[in-house]
Amino acid sequence: MSVRVRFAPSPTGMLHVGALRDALFKHLFANHHHGVNILRIEDTDQTRYSPESEAEFISTLEWVGIGFQEGPHIDGPNGPYRQSERKQAGIYQPHIEKLMALGHAYKAFDTPEELAEMRKVQEAAKQSTGYYGGAWRDATPQQVAEAEAAGKPFVIRQRIPRDTVISINDAIRGHVEWDSNTIDDPVLIKADGMPTYHFASMVDDHLMGISHIIRGEEWLSSAPKHAALFDAFGWKRPIFVHCPVIVGTDGKKLSKRHGATRVLDYAAQGYLPGALKNFIALIGWSPGDDREAMTEAELIEAFDLKGLQPSPGKFDIDKLRWLNGLAIRALEPDDLLDVLIDYLHTPYTLDYFNQLEREEGQPDPKQIEQDLLNLDRAISHDRGFALEAIKLEQPRVHTLADFGSACAFFFGDLPHMDEKAVQKWFFQPHTIALFDEMIEKCSTSFGEDTMISDYEAALRGFQEAHGLEKLGPVVHPTRVALTGKTTGPGLFELMGVLGPERMKKRFQHAKELATPA
RNA sequence: GGCCCGGUCGUCUAGCGGUUAGGAUGCCGCCCUUUCACGGCGGAGAUCGCGGGUUCGAGUCCCGUCCGGGCUACCA
Image 1 (cartoon, rainbow, N blue to C red):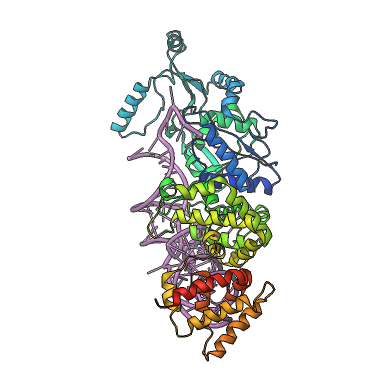
Image 2: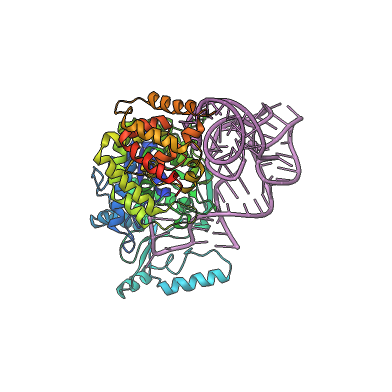
């Protein structure tokens, strides 16, 4: 069977991680089976649809690397791919007429007030609310003709069969069945003439030859309506696949309250598309073995509906960070630098931190923005030097954004000095002598071709000359003098990158700080 | 309220009648080491939501129950 799936978002806002997961599963599934992945825009609700949102969807999907074989941005043999355009092309009209001719749909002239009243009565009677056979399901042709003649607005509803069982065979959940009397008659065509999701989506799925309807679990409740619609037309039903949703740490459906849900925000925070896909794929799916860190090719190769989980998963940022760190370390330094430049040059990166509100216990977003800005400048000023700095930080960061603060000390004349570090290491008996010797060596013996081992030898020489038992008391003040802090890359490596000229200024500055006033 | 789905370490998961319930992340410790990471090793952490069955034997099958979630729009 040839696999054809579709990602059919309703672009009413940002593309969030839940939708990304939905898109990713289809992407993986389609590619695994060498099938077709279609992008279709569900814009039947004209009051909520926004073109900006559609643009964000498309650019985000592009960033993350989820491609489509057909869609509004690339066209294809089953177009148009926007439902509003399909409506205008007259695609739905003959189908609704056929459905009415078949007796599977009917016009309903209820006013919103009448429907509200009906609901109130149902609630009071503790019945389930919905249109189970309202005034118009069994109306006579005369009643309908009169209402039409009077020009009353109407919707077209699906006539759900009564007194039977509607069941589906879900790929994840297996057999699921409903008493058809508990399914209300959904609106197929709204009063404004636009089709609803229940109608347009199913008609399109059939017309586009969709083999698997892969969607979120929140659709399971309306699956019997959709199944019944396929049956009413006499169409072959696609395979239903209702995926579990991604929930926030409180177990509720992911929403803006849970912090970052916008996929572009993860891009701005410096997560790599590959790591994000890897991570997202692992929520609700597993390859069946112990593999976790996987390349896209491996994900595609391993992806199988059988590995899908029925229960919802929580979004664990720590695991994403781990995977992202692995992805950064897996990059060749030169490629990493290119990725970093792209990242820094994406306008949303800086905007994101600029607009981010400062949070207790979190680094200041304005500082992150500044560090990123400085990093970008440093790269364009001296790519070679920046590359060396980045290479030393590559094993120690988890996101691209981390490079800003991690590399900051390399750039500029003097690093920001951490007060505690200065207090701890600058006031030993030998400190000033150490800085003096380093200043001296920076202008004499150290040169551009001084090797890392030479720097080590110089510091060890000082240690021996001063009868120090350990190297620490030499290394630590030197590190603070050079970087302003107590953490970072190996000292000798970092000296090799910095070079004598930069070091000299820093040692002089350190000496001033270490000299009692 | 009604209908439906779900429930294994904090988290993501493996498991498909017989396992000391495995892995990963996070956490802790040790090693590596000039620091922080990376990497390596080890540890704590799950009476498999709960209660009944079926069975020689149940996380795995059945029933009940509790809890969580979704849907219940002329939104998707």
